[in-house]
Amino acid sequence: MTELTLDASSVEKRPIYQKILVMLSIMTTVSGSLTLLMTYLNKGFSQTFFFDWGSSYLIAMFVMAPTGFTAMFLFSRAIDSLIPNAADLIKKLITGLLMALVMESVMSATTTANNIGFSDSTVYFDAWLHGFLGSLPLGLVIAMSMTFLVKPRLEKFMHS
Image (tube, rainbow, N blue to C red; front, side):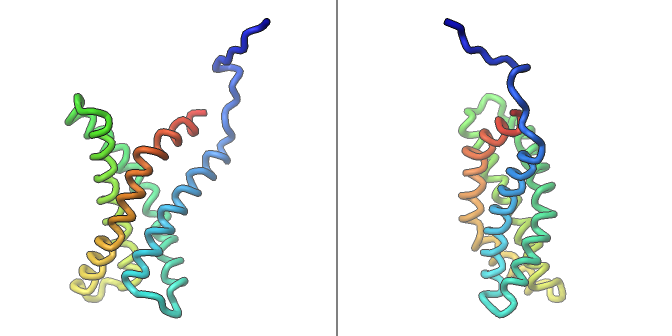
């Protein structure tokens, strides 16, 4: 009877297009759902809702990816250096909370700028805050899901 062994040379690497498609699907789901909610909170359903949402979504896609990857990297490094002896659960909770706050702030800023504009700073800030606070519960669920469920699996997938 022969023994089945797997070594690094016998395992095939995943094609790069699969990795790109997985990342795009995650980004599409996250930014699409959050900008949909923020656009609704800023403007409600109107005749231009889908155009407003679509343009906010496209802007968020180009802003979210670099912001999210950079923030995740920086937060992970900072948390590991500031509280190296903390339990992994605590580190993940802090990372998820910080990611939610940063990503919601940035996405609310871009969505509000796209939907409301900067002509009146008071109106802009009120709409930003309304969008931020209204979408924060969804953002927290997404951030915690990403931190605890998606990120570990995604890292394994990307290294395969």
